[in-house]
Length: 112
Length: 112
Image 1 (cartoon, each protein chain N blue to C red):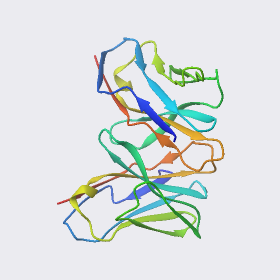
Image 2 (image 1 turned 30 degrees about the vertical axis):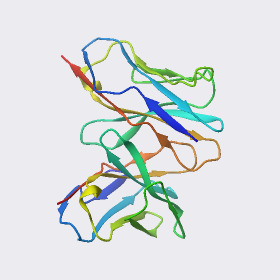
Image 3 (image 1 turned 120 degrees about the horizontal axis):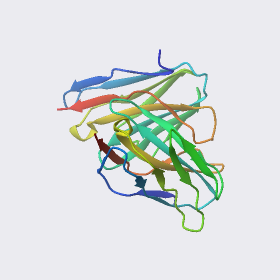
Image 4 (image 1 turned 90 degrees about the vertical axis):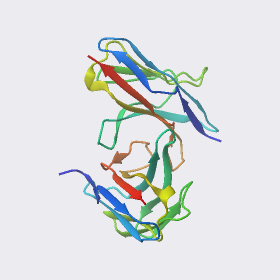
């Protein structure tokens, strides 16, 4: 089993719908991240969390929210999805500020 | 601010060719530097890293040297294989900072 698991792997939805992407990890890391990947733009940070009570905005947090339900779980929500949120979303974890991130396999979201 | 610039792709080579993917950075502090690789349908994974000037990171036949004088961390491989086809991301983290900064990614395709 993967150390960082994302669900769903693929999702197609309509404008205005609420969507939740879930991430769970078995690595025992405190730090968890959500990134968005768009062609030619690399990875952009949406939100990050260093423990259950800690939530921080990244560079593109507008239109997104997160919940850190437990050390191992970090969910990303789109309250009202719009087409320009169509992208590949990655969850990642790390044990500390080493720069070595462990990524999930990604969740491809299409908003029609 | 802190940023990473990679050579634009896509890059297409024949098997056994020599590979260079350029990466330069700007940083307000003293960074650690990384190359991540994303194989088709997968999340990113760490390929190699270097934490101080003149360090050479290496893995799977790939190498990159931390050049402080030219603020560069170019990725090289002497003889590429079809299995090296992937997207490659250069990244940095400043000591004491909380977040990786990624370049935009370079797509590499190796033809047999």
